[in-house]
Structures are given as C-alpha cells and as structure tokens.
Length: 475
Image (cartoon, rainbow, N blue to C red; front, side, top):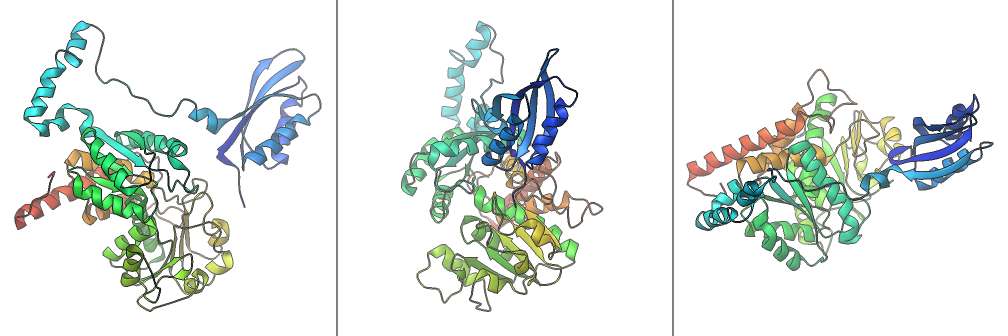
C-alpha cells in the first residue's frame, strides 16, 4: 500500500479566518485524508484573516488533490495556490557551470583565454597526455543515455530522461566531487551511440552509461571499452551489482550464512540481473536460479540471446523450471531487479528460515516490504522510506572518484569487489542488524572509502600487469 512520500510533497497556501482553531483545522484536514503534515507556516497575518502555507507529503497526485479539497472544505477557507515541491525543485534545472578561476580584469582574461590559452593548446599538441593535467578532463564524466530504459518509466526518450541525468550529475558532485554532465542522445541506434560517445570522449575522463535498455547496453559498453582510453561504466549493471554485493555481505553476516552455501533466486535477467549474477558468481555463489518473465532460465529454453544464454550456462545447475513463485520455495535469498508486485507475503513464507529479501524494483518493489518482513529475517528495497535502502548513489560517486584519481582506463572485477567491501565495511560491527545492513546514502565516509578501495585495487592491478609483462592502455 502506498504511503506519503517527499516525492509527492505539496504546499497549499490557504487563507483562513483568524480563529483560535484555524491551524488545528488545517492539521485535521490533512490527517483525515492520510497526508503527512511536514510544515505549517503563517505567511501573512491580519486581525481577521491568516494566510498559512500547509506543506505535506502525499501518496500521489490524486492524493494531493484530495488533500486540497479537504482544506477547501474548511468553513471560510480559500485556497490561493497549490505548489508541487518536486516541480519547484526542478525549475531551471538542478546543475550549472561555474568558473574555478577569477575573471576580474584583463590580466585574468589574458591568461584564461586569449592570448595565454594558446600556450596551453600548444603544450597539449606536443604532449597529449597533459590534457588530464591542464583541462577539465581529469575530473569530468559524461552521463550518457538514450532514454530507452529510464527508472521504472521505460522508453521515454532523451528529453524526458534529462531530469534523471541532471540528478545523477548533481549526485556525482555532491558525494564524489566529480564534475558530471548529462549527454542525452536522440538516437537508439547502437552504432550511432558508440560513434557519438567516441567523438566526444576527448572532453571527459570517464563515461557513465545510464538507462540504456538491454541487450543493446551490453554491446555499447563492450565496444566503447575497446575504443576508448578512459573508463566506461554502465551504472545500471555494475553500480547495481556492487551495492547488491555489499548489502548481501552484511545480510549474510546477520543471518550467519555463507554465500557459497545459500540458494539465491534472482528476478530480472536484464542489465542489472546479468551483472549481479556475474559478480556473485565471482565471489563464490554456487546456487543461483535466474527468472525472466516466463520463469526460470535454463538451458532448455530455446532462442535465447547471448547474454541470457550466458546466464543459462552459468546458473541453475539443478535445471529447475517453473515460475518465479515455484522456484522461490526453499530459497535463502531473493534479489529482485524486475517489476512491481510479483510476489506476496505468502510467497516469502515459502522461503528457507532466516531468508533475505532484496526487492529493488522502483518505485514499487516486487513484494510489499512490510508483508515480506513478516516472514524474512532481512528485507531491503530501493526506496528511501523503508530501512535498508540499496541505492547506486553509494557506488558511482566514489567509484569514479577513485577511477579518475588513479588515471586508469580499465574497470576490473577486483575494483568492483573492493568497492563492495568498502561499502559493507562502512557499517561497523556494533551497528549491524537486520534493519541496518547498508550505510545511509548521506554517510559522508562512504564515497572516500570507495574511492580509496578503487585506487588500491587499481594500483594492485598495475603491479600485477607489470610483473607479468602485460600493459594496459591508460595505466
């Protein structure tokens, strides 16, 4: 059941008689409709009238209209204006560019622009590697999308995807100190996307692919990694896999189980599901069954594309078939990266004792977390209004901070595992419990810890390559 959320917060400016019960009537109107009052401020006051701003969280837009009608029904009340706080936050966009150097007089201009800038250009012509040192390249990431798989909204296109990419760029800066910029492409042709990103790459120190549908995302990422000398990271795949591994490490500690002993069911065989399975296998998971829309993936399925065939080849060693609900019976771990409302609390009750449930579909998870918690030992979602929020923002700012600082071009499993361990270890042993398996996205220690882990893993990779006589571009 939906609950009020800050994502649907409204402010109702209402004029009411200046009576002793004026504000209590407003509070009652909001609570009677199930809204969550967060602020009540007097904007204007006269001897006979008050103008009050009533701010509350609602369940959705229809619920906001219901609350407004309830306020309007108060005797003598006149609603002046209703403001949607989420829309107000996005007015004019969420990011901007600011100069890092003073431009106050002619000397500043002569150094920052012509004629002095020509010296910097010539230096880069002679030593291209100095571009990282002398330009924004060393700290800038392109957030690239074609708008084909945006959040839970699907294929909404590049223009409608822009608010998400802006938000991603803001998070890069806020948590990792990384300058990121949205690059929303008006094409869904893999060849065109690869060529455009290749062509703009000189500006950037890294590429973050975002919200590109599978299986095209696999091809685009692989081709760009082969073409570019900067890191290419598909957050929907690898960011999700890293944070899921981090949360699972701690959840398994809570229930005292081992990754190599548990039976894991993964719902969703797209970009996120594929990457999660791959990373869990690398960490010793031996018993995974993946489920798509038609049920369990196994080698008896016909006509599978290569990435789903890879899943069939590397999971479901018992050759299980059947629906998600059927294969969930007896499972120790459920990881959902698929669709809303696939399961009920009764389905979770069929899992093994001390079960772990990660229902990560957004905004509506695969199973209601309250219902799941009646039967599972540990429950996590992707939402901020429930305990254990598994969110990629714990990964990508620190991960790219580490990549940019290390100046590497290749992203390895060792880096991803190191990042997951850094996130998991950010929860102290004395803090760890069923409702706290993953640190808060606002924990300021997480991004630096992830960055340090990535830098250390990158350094170890360089040493190993040098010892074996191998070389990697960008190291």
